[in-house]
Image (tube, rainbow, N blue to C red; front, side, top):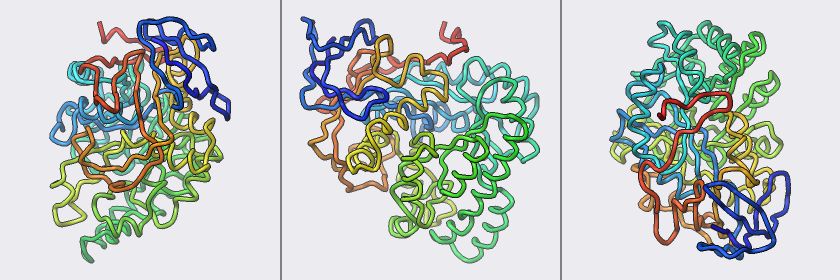
Amino acid sequence: MVIRDGLVAIKGEDEFKKISIIIEDGKIKELTDTIPLDDEIIDAEGLYVLPGGIDAHVHFNTPGFEIREDFYHGSCFAASGGITTVIDMPCTSLPPVTSLANLKTKLEVVKQQSVIDYLFYGGVNGKDLSDFRIKMKELAPYVAGFKCYLKSGMESFGSVTYAELREILLMSSELGLPILLHAEDEAYIVAAESEQRKLGSGVDNYYYSRPEAAEIIAVSRAAIMAEETGGDLHIVHISTGEAAEIAVKHGVSVETCPHYLAFCLEDFRKQGSVLKVAPVIKRHEQENLWSQVADDTISFVTSDHAASRIQDKNTGSIWSDYGGISGSGLLLPYLFSEGYMTQRISIKRLLEIVCENPAKRYGIANIKGRIAEGYDADLVLIDPHQEQMISGADFLSKGRMTPFEGKEFKCKIIKTIRRGEIVYDFNKGITSEAGSGKMLRVQGGRNELLD
């Protein structure tokens, strides 16, 4: 296969380069100005060619919660947005991925469904800390990191205390893997929510139950603890600029999500539960967070994809409405449109926040995240001259409600290529078989689970 005459985004460069890409056996063989004869030539004239995106934070709910989403639909939606690799969270599957046996159970299902490549995180469940050190050691060769919560809303996956987090961070140092933390202070939220439930069941009640202070407290305590223990800590879905600054000051990495970059509390009031997430959408943080994305305070951007049925978002009370957004298929188009096309960020920075940095953080930078010889031929062809109107009804995810409904993105995904195979075509839809995606091996890890 040859991708001919596209405007190719190369690592470290702020300008696109018109060049052709030769693909052989799923790998990038050569970047060249000479176009060879080939059985399959894709004319990319006038299109931008980027590395396939990496969404390092998804909840595809397989197995156990497929009524909301499954790995097939989630991976199809991701592919439609130019994502070729996802990393799936351990908490929204049954059983949760807190042991090697549970990971094997999950893999047996996922390997039959995904159309794109994937990794898993292990988890530390506050409701079952028996032998957690042994379980982390067993899982370590096969996962990209370990997720835990300081405030969890899930019955099957509980919170950890600060004292327990300290022990988990010590294990991270021993294992050489990051701890991914949902950082909101449980004591603050429990007390505030108790009061707010007495006052009502609307958006403002939910916001005041877990405002900026709940995140700042948790991030501050966890970041200091990581620095003291030497643990490798990463804060997921940061929503408050002050919290991000505190984390980075103590050597802790952070990510954010498109919904925190795009929306504020007033939008939440207007749209209601379609914008219910945790951490909550904050008052006026968008421009602050965008500045931190641009200046490298925030390492990368993820979707935190968490789909749901429409009825689960409309129960009549903010307290019981499902919290989560269908986002994996919008991650790259949103950042391209509202980041690169509006000149908030350069193409160099765009590649860092959606390709290179997550690949580096999670041990796959030797095969994913850039367009270079020897790398997996994961590519996305984007037309910057067409606009895309966002409609949840068109999503390939099971979750079809979106706070971006009716928004116009300044680009269109034309093709998504995973290891040299076209998995999504704008005119044809998904063109790859379920199960064609594969579990990746983290550098230094093992992959005999696939045997």
